[in-house]
Length: 559
Image (cartoon, rainbow, N blue to C red; front, side):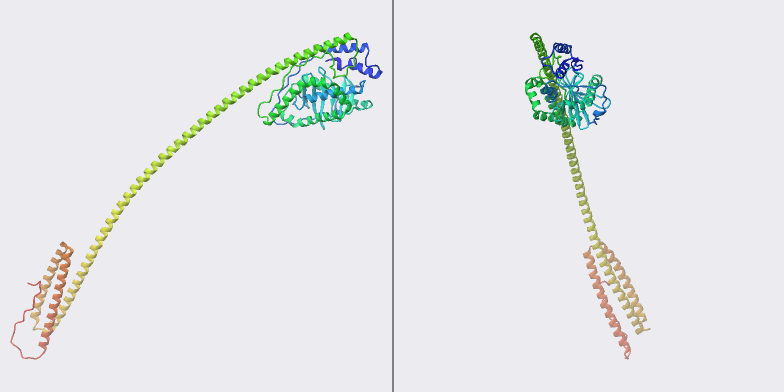
């Protein structure tokens, strides 16, 4: 650790001595020797700048607040002092505001754990560091000079405290106004606790593992930190003394922080692009740079130049400054080469990623084409199967239709045959019914004839009595013979009718009808003759001589 920032025997000791003793700004020989010793100590070398750690994806986590000021331990008490010129007091505040402006809204380089709080750390290419930890009402910031393990400025939401070594040399309010020196004593207790806290955090950062800040946590607190930086810029614009100091050293400060601002702006842009993607891609790599070379003396524009001396020593100082600038330029060139190499590596990685993505897209397209071809083939196969199924269905339907048509034809033929048989049966039944009716009519006729004949016979028997008995018997035998002969003829006719066609049956029926009519006529004639004989017999008359009975007419069927 450089003794420049720890003991008042160094640069700040001279400043305090000059301020308290009322000496001239030129200083004494002892003060100049202390300054030379301090520059020699700083030239011994600085610790390597810890590498930045990429941000971590994931859900936001709860950030524990750091202890308030009155809860912090105070192992020692800082001394109260002040600078020789009031305007020089803004060197501390302006330096810290320059660091904050150069960092911008770039994410922290890393975080670590102290058991409760996880401070965020930014380390610049010039060697300055800024630590931040959440507190009630905002953040508490600690600013460190290159190579120093104690702060030169601590800022909380209400005040800012400037240190030269372990001396409190300035206190500012939230608006950037410098408090009167008499008020420093009342703030010395808090300033002491902040000073010890800053040294504790710095030492702990060297012991604990550095890890990436959760990107979601930074996204949630980014606007709050940017608002604090904007508040400083507004305060600087309002403060005339601060503006005067800024104008006097703006060119040097701007040149010193130009590359840092560019690098941090690039990191902020990468984070914003990653945030727009929803932190789904790999986190962007932080900007890498080499640690700065130790400055041969405090830079102009950093702390006021309160040192005098002869021209030779000033020439030596200028030579050392020139050597430092050359070393710084060489380091910047090396950093640029490293950045270019890293850019080429990243470009190669991006190209490889693009090629891999293209190959993946080609594979996906090929897989999609294969899937589409499989789908098309499956569709074609389904269509072919459906077409074959439709053809088979059509063939089956055609076969079924043919079979149904054939069945309809067969059914129609069967129906026609049934109808024809039914018609034939109806005709036959009608013929049989007609035949039966004819036979019944004939039987009725025969029955009537028989009844008539019997009645006539009984009448003749009664009329003729004993005399006509022989004749009646003879006629009865004749009638019986006629009936038998008629029955035989009817049987023969019936057999003939079955063998002949309907015409012959009709002819026989007509003949039978004529025969019946003839028999009826004969019977009627016989009855008339019998009635006449009976009447003749009933009349009294002389017994005539026996006469022969006139022969009766014969029927066509009688021999």
